[in-house]
Image 1 (cartoon, helix red, strand yellow):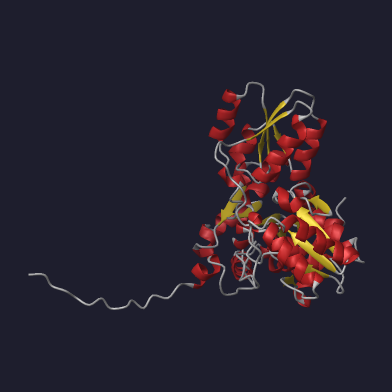
Image 2 (tube, one colour):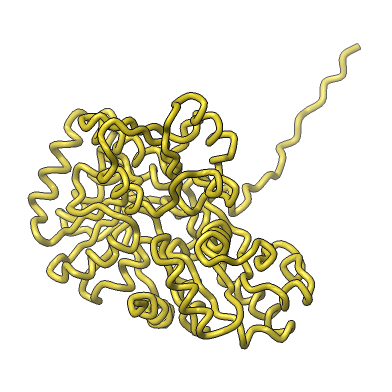
Length: 395
């Protein structure tokens, strides 16, 4: 005999995180992004390129488009300037006549541009879901709790915060308020040297790998001088003694793209391509940096390939869009450029900025509709700008 039961509807509610990941709801304090309003044109629309050109031409000098190196080629085509996050923010500030700054990058980059540009300029992010997983790994609440831990350990007064550019405006503001500075991957050593002139210890946010690599590889510290603060554990998972003995207190954060590269990747590419030069970004793990031939920022990588001799071979450990673009660019000079890992790895949030989002943004602005504006509140902006200005004053 078969028993038939009537299924009762389950009262299952999606979590706030699930809604964010689906591109719904809103959380202005999160780098995961929020809902993008409006109807996007279809990716298959054959007129997308023409529409983008027409809208940009209509806007004229009112719009200035910034394209980060990790963006898709279809987006880079329409960028007025390309570069890393800080270079682009400075470029925007140097273009006061542009009413609209369209930042083809991720959320923290657009925040930095808003901080450095005038009040009359409006910074726009084509897709509000273009965030940064690394920046999300350090929230204002977590960092404030960490500072309380350092205070209770009696070391906050001798600790200087240094925050990577890849952080939210809130974290930059915390850094400015507590006497610290911002750094990029190209000036991290100078920033740390400055910080150690101000205090005995550094709290490095939010990328542990850049902090560790700079301290050990560039400044001669030992791995024992570094401790890892885990915001998800009581007291960061550290004892008071460990905190007091450390020179570098590293935040437990990382880049999801650069963190994928491994020593196996390095060994494998050396076997496959005899004589290859391995060049990696300092956001990679310490053991990968140690195994590489060259280490440097995005701009360093580009300049190294420009200066490389004809016929040289390079395996690059950074985001795939840039590596592929460099491979195409230098093929004519008989320079072989390959991605360090066999696994294809784009920055998923950076790649949310695509041609349909750019077209929708430009057409909206051309019609007089301001969309997806990124605006940092005045108090946060003032302290974040103070931290950025300390960086600009570095020798």
